[in-house]
Image 1 (cartoon, rainbow, N blue to C red):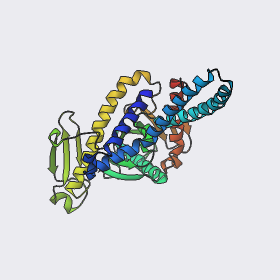
Image 2 (image 1 turned 45 degrees about the vertical axis):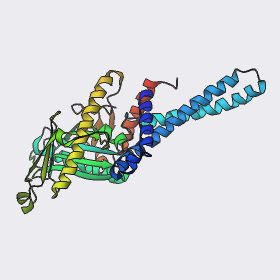
Image 3 (image 1 turned 135 degrees about the horizontal axis):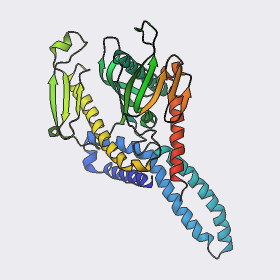
Image 4 (image 1 turned 180 degrees about the vertical axis):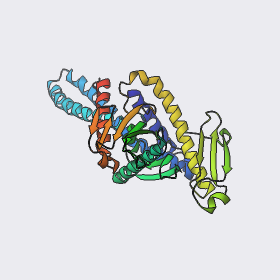
Length: 357
């Protein structure tokens, strides 16, 4: 954690310097990007600065405690208790801010929902998950935007990608990554048998443009006619965009907008996010043996949750959480679930880090 905090503070100070450089000030786009990243790091960087300052003050006061002057020792005794109380509070606040790793304070993330096994029923479940996240975002005052969607004839989604923006979005939604399983009786099931189907969710922090330097010669851009529902425009206008990253082989296709320019902008956002996520996952794997909890690990192959409709039950298998409020949760009251996951992760972090020493 200390390494993470040092890295954040160093980056924050680099950005502080860039904000006063003529090269940045003369470029409106660069200034906006640097200012946005600087702002996203400000809360944790300034708090860590305060923590380091408190450490210095405690060390200086400790010297006075061991001095020969009785009056100064008495003053130092009163002062050091106050400083240590501040330090404890500050440390707890830093723990809270770093919950979820170095990307905890991202204010933008991309959520990708894909139907898994179960055919049409899985696609309908993917739609239910989308509606749940959409309503939860509305309750939180977050901004949500559909980046790409592949609807089915019955109203479900083969896959759908969302951009979510707002305070604490990644810290909270990171726990949704993984396999989601649904158990219910489909409307088309005449004999009333319960079917099981699945969907996967991936929640990825969206990097700032300055963090992923993606050059046009690093990917291939293909323009083609959109397919699927959409009327005459779909057949006549070549506005869909497909980007293929040369080194990684990652492919992103966007066709939801009528404007080729808008589709390209969305495709670049998703491609940068996936590239950043790939790099982040590689770094996480290197540190995996030191992490006790799988909560928030982002492993899509891990089955994290079951939604049982006949029993109105939601079970999160990572923390042995069972709630008989499935209807309320799907209606957007996801907070009771995310709070439980956050609390569990917080306890795991405290246990692994120990105290201030």
